[in-house]
Length: 291
View 1 (cartoon, rainbow, N blue to C red):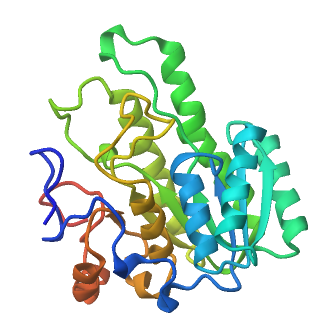
View 2: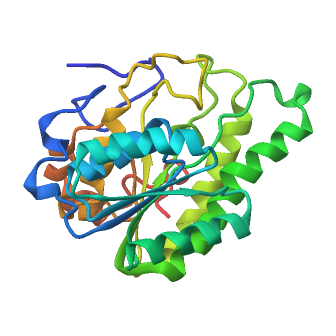
């Protein structure tokens, strides 16, 4: 059985996963995305691209990816189409930090797919440079908030009018937003601050929009372009990709408005479904105070 990569991590489930496993396979009929229109920001690379491929494998009606770089979108688009030639693949340039840009991108997508958005993966983001609070450049703080917080803010406002009935919003969050500072991971306060802020915003969004099914997901520690200092992470990029397909399925309906890690075992989660759904478990809160 795999173990968490750092001693400070405590797993919610006994089993810990670093790579895909049968229960979250996107080819399982129980997690089928057939008939669904999926839209992913930051879909040209990394976790976004892997998730797009996984949703195509799950039989999605359409998979649309948004990114700033045309070459990355084209490469990702070819991989998505190869995964399932029957899935309508839409490549759309857009910048989440620019409200006009992301609104135009989503508007163009719904016109091309001739329908509304069933599954929206809020995934675009950056990992800012590391450094201590007192030595940190203000410009880097602003850049981090503009993309990780305001980018999510812009995306939520642009997505909501285009959401299909019963739409699902999956947010690629980070456990760093609820960690205490860890000696194993110094200097990442700016990323932690933006992820914590985005999580709180999305909690309010979920409360204000009860018709949208919201789940926050920590994708694991994956080596992608966003974190070049981790060229090979302990977790494969396919782990969060397949986990997100499972999260969007009816099997995971009990995790609505919860925060979950892709490393956790879904069979163990399902075994505690009623307990999780009816309690404050898997919510970010003040330790020891149920509120």
